[in-house]
Image (cartoon, rainbow, N blue to C red):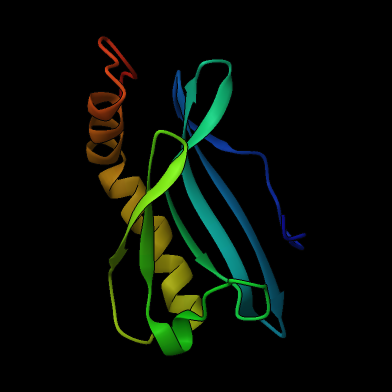
Length: 124
């Protein structure tokens, strides 16, 4: 896993839901980030959806040339990638990703719960 300069504790959104944010900056510009919605399932935090930007990592993504995308997880694996924007500055992508996960957390969680057969799940 990439080491980030800033890694605050996860932001708990509900009993079984949290938002994990990690990022690094270079002269005030976001150089890499990972923002991930997670669900507590079977004794571990599982990825629900993730935004990321790290042009220097093996297999990393550079949103300034590739555009912002959302990784969607199902059964512990990346299920699909949803393209969100065209090329975008990293600071704007970071802000957009964070806003999307706050605004659409309930929708993402409901889909995750449906896929995993979870009834009476997280209360968002």
